[in-house]
Image 1 (tube, rainbow, N blue to C red):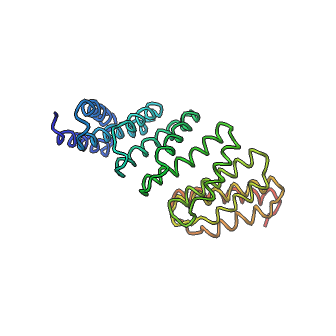
Image 2 (cartoon, rainbow, N blue to C red):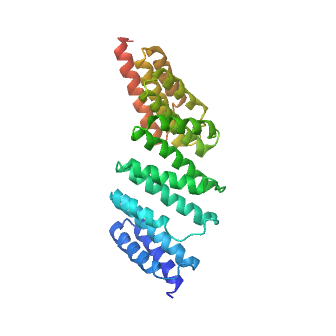
Image 3 (cartoon, one colour):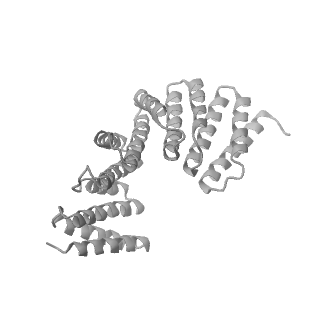
Length: 281
């Protein structure tokens, strides 16, 4: 058997190449390591760990290089690495690989295949009690709802969003972001069903979400922007303006670039709404 320490050293070298931005070299090294480790004794923990690391790194490198179809296949290979699913670290590795495979499939427009992956992820790890895997499952469920909406399975998407809105904790920093995303999905599904007034009401539920995390704040702001747009379409421009003003006031002084970008969009929407109203003050 090859020395497990050599596999670990090679895995570390792949990471170093990646960190240095030498993506093509890192990709070649990861592929060679994955091939060699797969032929070794994967029951040895270091060999198995090195095999997963090589496969997952290869998938991430392909993602960064923009080959998302190949990356989806590479994440599937990483998820197939032998693992003890009773061991939390190995369990969350498999879940993470499946989640990323679904994301890549969504990104290339293969939503049907993505739904199958999310279904697999949720079915296999629904009962996981470690926080990391549980978070992957939540993200998989939210992404599944979005994929259902993308393939016009609107009723199913709305049902999935309804369940998530009831279950996710708005006070938990990680779940708050996913809840805000789900609120937005629910609003989009209702609009697709020509239930715009319900959508506007549903989007207001985003106020329940804690906004201590920038990712959550960006989702909250985006939900209010979408609500304002729906209100305008319903002829309730004064409510739309009040919604936008409240968001701008609430997040004045925001420094996170991701959130600032969305707030700038809100300011632009407000300016357009005021201009359309003929208010020159």
